[in-house]
Length: 175
Image (cartoon, rainbow, N blue to C red; front, side, top):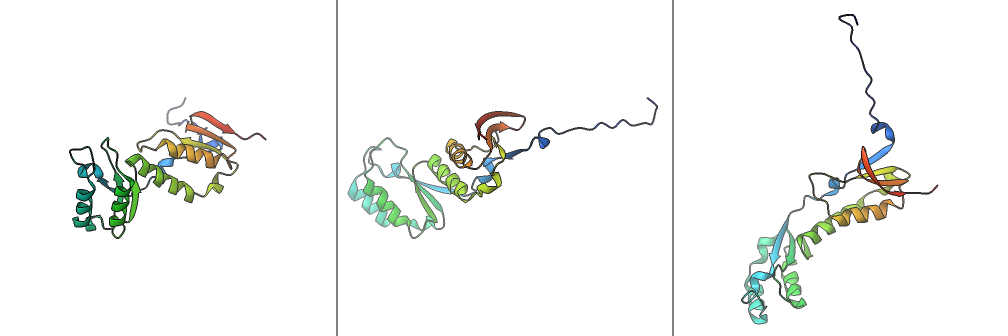
């Protein structure tokens, strides 16, 4: 090799040339914040909900602190809470809350991902070989992977899970 001559090597990106369409469900994650109302704070001795005490509390509390917020009603205590108690909270929060959810934080995430998936235009995946990204810094609920795969199975040519360089096959349409 003569000095001064440069050797140019062509680097081929096999993943880019594979025809795989990679999709990261993390792009659908909502930035919505949530205020949690835990009814456990209203339990007598952490065990039972006394109707009169609870009704007085609900009537006297200033619910305006929830103005414009997404509110999750939950009970983290191992107690049986009558349905009417949650209904009272919903009624009092209605004038203030942006949205109201019931359950745990996982339920909230599931609902937000389901809404985002409902708005997703699946036509861009029609007859495509799709890799659903499997790892990342953002925690994605399993329900989002399940719902996305269910919807994607109707339009995609194939579905894989993981990274384009290392995938687990999920589905391949028979031709």
